[in-house]
Image (spheres, rainbow, N blue to C red):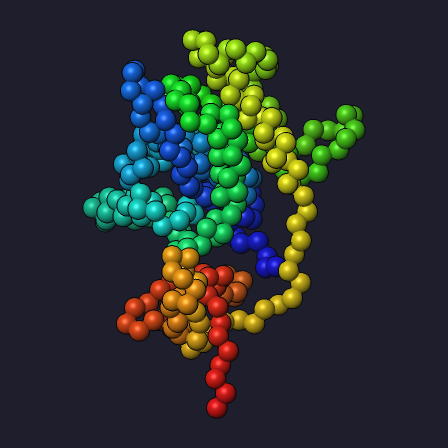
Length: 312
């Protein structure tokens, strides 16, 4: 297994200096007598494992830029953003670059260090964002059980998302001792606000409150359901993971490969040659460019199969 990337080791930098972003949803919320769709967006600090969750009214560039402005106002400007190649993320990068290019040269010099660097994962490579994709998977599984398909008010849903943010930021970052006399474990909240827990004392409300008109109690029951699912399914998974012990050979330019594409039958997967490789900072190749006839595709190494060379 390779060393951790630089974004995971931003030592002596503020939280969210390197941030991974992804959206999830949609969920139905009640606006008066009608139901509308809402999406969630998760910002994850790659170093401290802290999360920031917000609500999106649409899955477009404008909604993402508004959420990004709210995030920067509360947590500060990130140095880099890691994300997939969603149209809202690509459009936001283009919008920010166009705005910067329209400034006068004097301001461009002064604000050059204030730009946000977008780092996009290659297509068909969700495992490149495993750090935040796994967080979203746990969040969605718990929300599916607690909220399900029942429409709730937008204010209640927004409160539940922020309660979930507090729960995720209270998880331990390392070993937890069973001795009550030992100091509390370090959590993302310890790094964000200087204390481990920022929540109000919890009150256990009966399940009958789900049908009442007390939105405050409704949100607390949903947050309590999420906490139970989090304890049952997520925390046991924070164990030591195994590592690959053998070094695999590096893929080279000119190698004949088959591109794995789940949209086609296996017999119709395209075959081409590697025309370019993109080594990382640790000199390991994780992304390649494959030329198939007159087209080129950028794919992760995990999505290509090296074919044996034909002997002369």
